[in-house]
Length: 122
Ligand code: HEM
Image 1 (cartoon, helix red, strand yellow):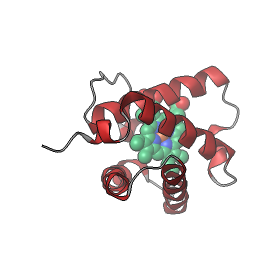
Image 2: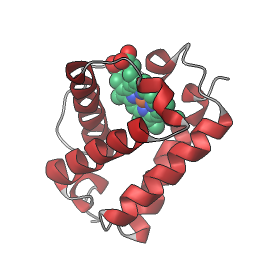
Image 3: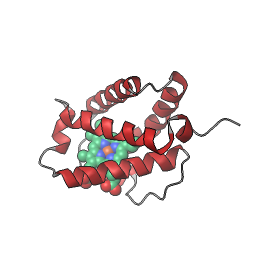
Image 4: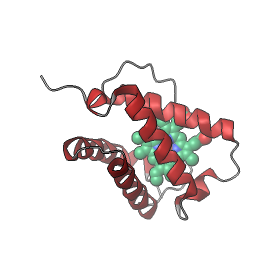
């Protein structure tokens, strides 16, 4: 039996590193940074933790996700196709930096694509 994507991504620590780096890069990004302007550090920390919890659960780890679903969480943000493409570029570069292999990278992309219609609403 193949190990869960969760364990192949390095378990909790691997996913925590991935989520933290991803949100950090998105916040600094010229195009995507606007979604995180005027937010306090604590609020961002809580969001990162929810992202970690969500990814752990969805990839097969033991986690009870207490956040909202993807449609509700991103409703009204006006995330466009262009934003989404940039987000995917950042995911690809972070995955590369963290040494995520091509098989796991492909599974992450399939998973993200399955969420796109809920998140890209503009
Ligand atoms: C262009 C793409 C995306 C942008 C710009 C974006 C932006 C944001 C922002 C600004 C928040 C904070 C909302 C708040 O504080 O009220 C948020 C929450 C969240 N996002 Fe995203 N997001 C994107 C894609 C994704 C994807 C692909 C996932 C899942 C893999 C995700 C998972 C989450 C989670 C779990 C939360 C927290 C939900 C909650 O507060 O209950 N996001 N997102």
